[in-house]
Image (tube, rainbow, N blue to C red; front, side, top):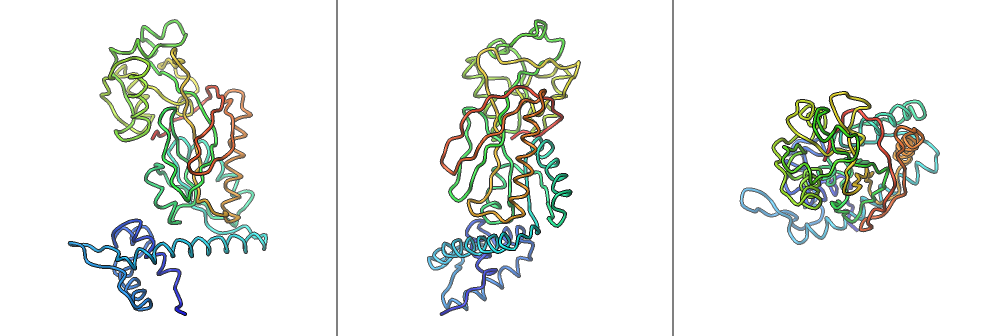
Length: 339
């Protein structure tokens, strides 16, 4: 019976996912030559070619694809075994790598990190600013353990197999106008249809927020917005509104508590919401990851207990299940990133 080295199997699995030796090396922290050498050793151990030339690069052979699929199973089993052994010992230690968009990192991950440092000082938590789409390959491959992302009504995210998505909270979207805008005077809801002449700001093209702004103007206003300014940083969008250069449609977690230069109004035609979701691998989590998830959930409950925030936590759903709806009211918020 052949002996298979899990580290080499990880290189092979990651090559199938990422497509180049350079990408595998960058993700795992090795030189490309090291990755190439280890895959060559694996080929010798297996006794059959796993890689073949494809133009200037490499591709997996049929045997390479087959072994990569088995590698996924073996690596997942090894991860589960490590989690079970750690749980059996009751020892909560290790490293957890968590990523999220800026507003989620500020409002959820950083407070959870503070709690983790007090409750579980043996756990090393690393926080990265990541978009959900960018982080999914790393999440599947184990280079990231937890990602907090978002999705908007009418624009659900894909839910790839092998991942678990836990809905954390839901918040309403608000129309944000310059305080001196004629439609801001009444203090009541503002119709998207009445904003047809306005210049808009949204996140970068290809993001969920960008698609949501365009979709909302089409569905509720019947027009294509003059979407002239794009930034995934809500601070920049808010500065554009303060400068009377644009109007915006933003979730409450990204809004300041009180800004005399801004008018934050409900949408007259409908209530639209953003959901924050936590994505993890759909395997038994290690105790350190469980502890961080508990801290994040605790922070969600603290937001829910804040009368100004009034955000409701919720349950989780597996890949392929549509998220349910929660009720939520506007809350105090500092700047954040949108996706």
